[in-house]
Amino acid sequence: QVQLVESGGGLVQAGGSLRLSCAASGRTFSTYAMGWFRQAPGKEREFVAASSWSGRTTYYADSVKGRFTISRDNAKNTVYLQMNSLKPEDTAVYYCAAPPAYRSGSPSPGEYDYWGQGTQVTVSS
Image (cartoon, rainbow, N blue to C red; front, side, top):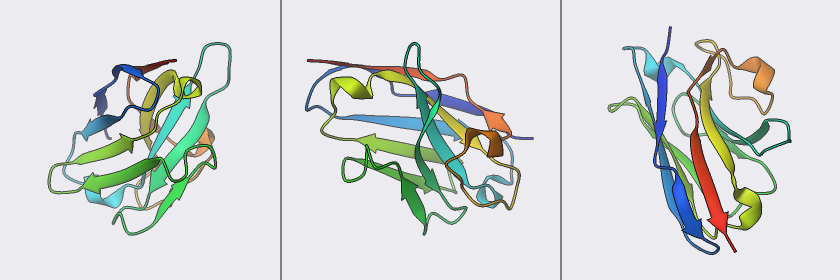
């Protein structure tokens, strides 16, 4: 079992930056790949980024590639999403998620068993 708690969301102007954090409970955090997803009003939840359990392999949605960076600190049981050059279309509730232990990261929300409560990111134009 993994419990996830996101933080770091807020209101920022276009072109600005935010760093989201996701703190995980449990002593086996390093066995879980981690992902970030987002959901805007009236839209489906979409993949943003994922990291392998070690952090050596990362994946990004085309819409955020070059602007967002996922990283993790297994000693702190925390995964981060650094978001730069934010755009109004990045406005959404952002969720971190974990698939079952030892599974690879995936862009499909259905592959993830554990979800945080979400944190709101609003980018003004």
